[in-house]
Image (cartoon, rainbow, N blue to C red):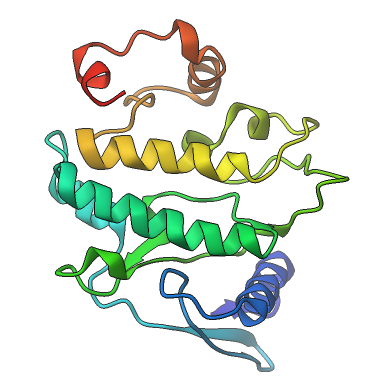
Length: 202
């Protein structure tokens, strides 16, 4: 729900509703229910995921990770949802653990992608140049703006999510990093030193 007076938020909600309504149903994409506009606010209804977000799950296992088998199921679910999204020529552009929800913790194939407010239709002849999304899950070409990018930026984000599931922490960001420090790390990935724990999962 957003207030109608917040035009940017309202536009994002309208766009998200339009994308979800246009997508064929898929078990790894959250189900769209309705979109309604009122005098003071706009409201979108989506499927309820009773077991929270992947971010909440990862926080319970911070520093030790979720383990190989649960992580593989999680990433498979995310990739199947992404395959459906990309197959319909959309790029999500803001994949991160908080945008993956869990319908049933006992069935990790129930994970679903949510929050399509920054998603965009992809046209291979044009590409995308706009910088948007959450910095610590952005691919380097997505960070600055002005550089052409496409569907692979979502795969970059999935790789970071996978590492976070396995290792219990983000692969690059550490507490105290400002934006400039983090961008330098991401753009010089080949020279960055990760230590033994990264080598175990890379």
